[in-house]
Image 1 (cartoon, helix red, strand yellow):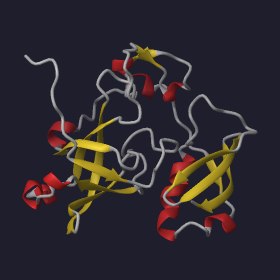
Image 2 (image 1 turned 60 degrees about the vertical axis):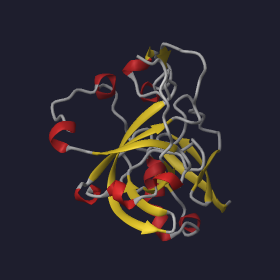
Image 3 (image 1 turned 90 degrees about the vertical axis):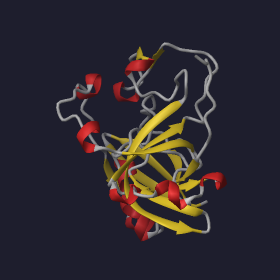
Image 4 (image 1 turned 120 degrees about the vertical axis):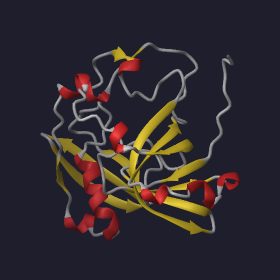
Length: 228
């Protein structure tokens, strides 16, 4: 059996996250987020998507292209546990893996042809803009959904969304169609798990905006919104 396999990039994602900071930690959490799957030139063939419109959801197999390590580390620190507890890498969804492959389930919003070939608009993706996609597969409810499944340590740590204080003067700077998704991103606490400094001003890019904020006592306060 071969020890290495050649994997091609078939598409890339077009999303509102130009950087890793602020990206949802799991797919499907922020259902308001819209992204597009844009195929590479050699795969821009509508016949390859024939029948996909019959499905509601899609699996995306993609590459952690910004988190590739040369050395294997058997344990990682999951953000869900505050970044202070180590778990085995294969017991987590950490991006630092021997093979930097990721799997996300998203909702298909529409499939349309464009000057870039067939483009799939999806919601709920957790990918940085430009992330390489190596495969897509339809989601099959009868086989993929397991209602009785248990979530390990994630079941024991309850996440409490942040309250968001977003001054109206700053919110008005954001395009109306982006506001709902941005509010959800902020409520999910975009800070790295190990950063909890109440005096620090954090910043990240979302769509064409830079958002700066502070967090204190479970309340996120937006300081400013500016175009980038």
